[in-house]
Amino acid sequence: MQTIYYDLRDTKGQQKEIEDKISAAAKILREGGLVGIPTETVYGLGANGLDADAVKRIFEVKGRPQDNPLILHVTGPQWLPRYAREIPPVAYVLARKFWPGPLTLILKRQPCVPDATTAGLDTVGIRCPNHPVTLAIIREAGMAIAAPSANTSGRPSCTTAQDVLEDVGGRVDVVVDGGPCVVGVESTVLDLTCEPPRLLRPGGLPLEDMERLIGHIDVDRAVNVSLGPEERPGAPGMKYRHYAPKAPVTVVTGAPAASAKEIERRALPGSGVICFEEFAGLFSKQVVRSLGPTSDKQLQAQRVFEALRSFDSSSVTEIYAQCPDNRGLGLAIGNRLKKAAGFHVVEADSLRIVLGITGGTGAGKTSALNALRDLGGKVIDCDAVYHEVLTGSDAFKNAINEKFPGVFTADGQLNRKKLGQEVFAKRERLDQLNAIVFRFLLPELERRIQAAEGLYAIDAINLFESGLDRFCDCTIAVTAPTELRVKRIMARDSIPEAYARLRINAQKQDEYYRGKCGHELNNASESPEEFRKESRLFFERLIESIMEEKRHG
Image (cartoon, rainbow, N blue to C red; front, top):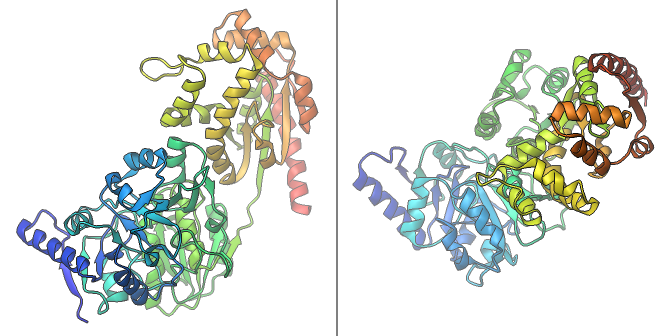
């Protein structure tokens, strides 16, 4: 078969010619043909999603396992009822926010969707791609296009039309060139048939963005480990070794400097290395592919498949890859690298110490944390993260407003004093607020803690109630006499004595923190500077003890 090549990179060019090529591609799809299509994530190998015979051709051309389901591509949420049933309201909330874009929703399928498309599952994945050419082809075809990535099964995905021609040229009818993919990794796959929703595949839409909109999302274990031979994948890319070049890959995780040193120790002359730009100079005797700077995950996502594919034209016999942390797009990039490695992962030797700092308002946690910063530590301030997440999440605001009507101003700002007066007066109301806060805040806090390297402190008044203490090497209670606490928060927050005492009385007493924590740091000082010095000496001794235990135990 001769594959026709349509160059539509310049969509502002000859409009009649562009429209003719789009119509021709749509006609081929309606007649059961295969078309390589551009999307913002990776190139897809498209067929009529309702034509079982056409879909089977996708599996044959790719060499794709039959139990690996496909995704239907549509032009917007108005198409959902055609192909899905029992659609939960959250599906439309997500679609309105993130479509067109790199998000696939798993929903119960309509009978019109064939088993060939869903791999026999009762669910179907649906997404709206953010590429004008493919959206035009879908509209012209008048049907959903089933389209996995256009690579040969198991190989790194295609991010250019030339990659598609290299992998499946001569076996498909048309390849449409819409330019290089701007995202670079496949769509995020979210299962909405369960509660809470479950992330089946991390992708171009970060988990954090979705959780800011709808709250907590479970992460399927297939994101981090390989499924067994008897387990059925619920979404594309969950089960099989994917994205793999010919040479075996080893992924090295950990802090960037530590993982680079670990690769330097292991890599032989002539080995392949995928690393962050800052560390490329370490590998003068290796074949190096740069992912870009450690701070630019968007660029890393665009480059990861290109880097993996490039080694197939070299003579390398082994590849080592640095792995970004799990925040933002890093979760998807790391997932693709680990799948390319068949989950052969090495953790770089980097020392991490996480301290849990808790205690009542006005006890002096700020001075203690400043002392920790003096020692080079970093602080995860749960209160600051709370306001950051609240600002970006309408769902979080709505959940609070439903339980505590009237605590937001007309322009959407939280009236902290009004909320405080309501929850500090009644313990059950404070518990209700904490339950909402934990639901929206914990996923973000857990990701930050898991990504921490070096010395970190978690500043959390509800350290134990939230369960954050399980991440800590040790916990410290900062305590102080009640009258000193009242004076401090009156001065700090410019509030009257009665409200200061209301806040303190609503919180746990020092005996609670002493009983829960492994250490106590008592602040009876009148001077914040003096307590900061005392805290520094305390932390120096404590950290030395923890480091010694980690090295030898």
